[in-house]
Length: 312
Image (cartoon, rainbow, N blue to C red; front, side, top):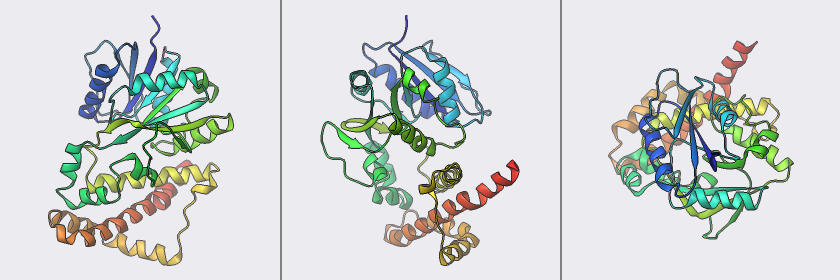
């Protein structure tokens, strides 16, 4: 019997986080017949999940875009849900968004997301955590940089793969994700542009809320490395023709970042040593901002140059 929905989850060395996500899907699927496809992007971690409803396929070191395409290629349902491995499914998200997607075939619906109260409490105990709370990184609103009003639907400007539900027919007509993006992030920008070209609309559903379970990624070094990977991918996107993604560095900013780069290990050590000293937060937040800018520059400039030279 054909499933109602194929849930495709790319993952890489996040076994414990993944299990929480899988458990939430099983608890919230209600009357839906769901096929779960986990695409393992790691060559170091062998996933073993004793559940006949979960299919595991290996796609080592090919990136999230390739993993999603691979999962879609073997999916049996007429509707596909691409879900991040750290999104805990809450309430009736699956049922409601699948129904709305069937009723409005040229619309993409995104649920809201937030960190759990337990996670927020952990973050409040150290300076980098308080930095994340200050910039509101702990919610979808913070990522978007704007308030999401408490309406049933809010018009939006694109899709995002933390929860992307689309018919398999439409996905195949788009030829899937662009696999040139090896790190997650800008494949969404590319997918959004192609969806817009064929008349899709995008909506956020503020009252349907997922829990973003990033308990393993709330350390300063993890944050910096992710900014670096994102910047590297952004430069690839720019070179592929997305001119709006270009980052311009003035002479003064380049020199400032080069200076910060000489002492970055000292700055990181300072933040970590005084992580529990809240009256130093303003200084630490400034340092984190500088380090973030440095790691973006490293990804955009140095990592891309190495990648380009290897490609020649």
